[in-house]
Image (tube, rainbow, N blue to C red; front, side, top):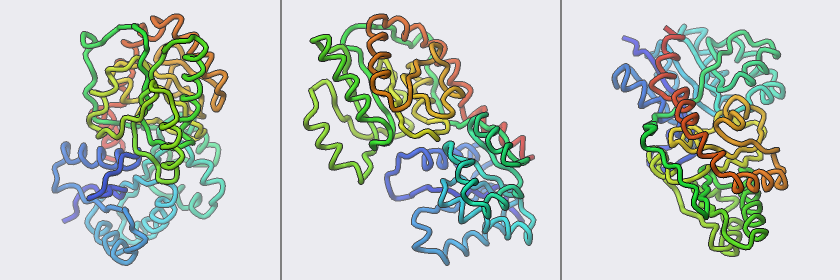
Length: 347
């Protein structure tokens, strides 16, 4: 007898991964298990799958035999392997295949890979995180694409729990993978400029997240040579993020990636009632409502970032007045709302 849903994703069991792809995969598995029961869910962990290609292929065939629906929850390299493989298995075994797109680069990737583009148009559904991505794929001729918000299992704060303090120094945090392309150096430079210009500590910056191995040496050097108002605070489990972020005045998201989707760190900030200072990546307007749930600056522009921070510290109530809006926005990304919507779409 077939089970209902198979999930293919990077679980990384036995290892500590705090990237968005792994977190989303685990949340998807946990939520589907809660709704449908553990016996109704099969999973395939793609961690190091290329080193165990034959074992992975066997598991994929078994999953296809037992599942009515299969969800691919992978980044670029994984999608390029598993979408074609499942398309051909689908022709034989008649299960339905869906792809949840992580990030915002899928359309650009398909422009460069006509083979996977052709096949991906023939699977049962592609779910993207923003309307901008939806529009980009429709322009490429996709008719099987749908918008589905990114999701997290959230303990959204009550409005009565919000803190409105604007005492100096104002506490800012970043809460994402620590790599140069996430704009870590930009936010450090901007805060340093403000504090030096004012001759006192206006902002403190705490950096959280897993340091990319390719950036570890450079980042260690940066932190060791930074003033004491800039600190690296290590890693936090994804289910504890709200408890940490809620203590901050502002969450900074200075990414240099134009193709971000719906960053989980921004969802965490909203659930914490903490507004966001964000660079304007391609899909930013889908996620950050400028001057309503956060403040937006030009991507990669340290001068504009510094200007925004300068304006904020002169009128900090502008940020605290956004807190209620953030809590309202967080509900749009609750897995308790998004996952049932997904299940209804494949029913």
